[in-house]
Image (cartoon, rainbow, N blue to C red; front, top):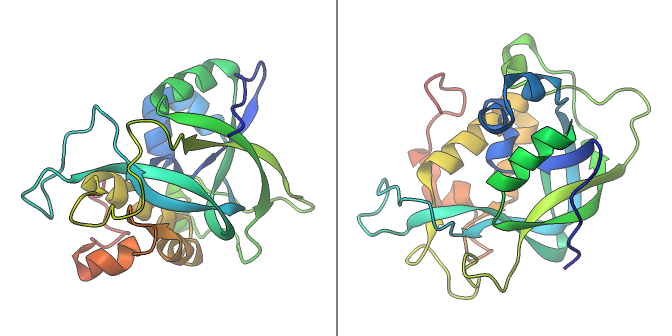
Length: 221
């Protein structure tokens, strides 16, 4: 895996889990840096989004299971035929240092990004998450993504790592999915269609079904 050295200047990051939420980003880099981070909806090809990373500081949710298996964070896995949607934002070096510490379980990998072609300007209701339409002439460019190293103890091997072994931390899936739908309904639907459990084949939205809260619920984290 291509581990990128720490950037010495501003760098673009693609958020694809809880970093879809500007409020979540602000809790790490501060309100000022988060407000300055322009959120542009993008798509990255060649990676699959799944919940198979188990940070050692996560306490299991116990929301959907009495067993301590709800403890997974979002991760990416290299798959040529796959893609996921996310938000591209730029941070200065000081904010990047704070974010890299938060994402210490992951490697930084440089990838090509492309704008989401179906994106329309967000309605006033959806601007609460701070997403913006790509400016005219916005072209695919490079950015960094966070990818868990397969050889670390925090990544569950996908083979056999199904719902009986590992489920998403409930707070993380509710936060990320709520932020995705606030960016836009089409963006949220694509998030649901490209987000898997640890087995890499079961969609999170299909597994939980109607148990998932309304993504527009104002009480979501």
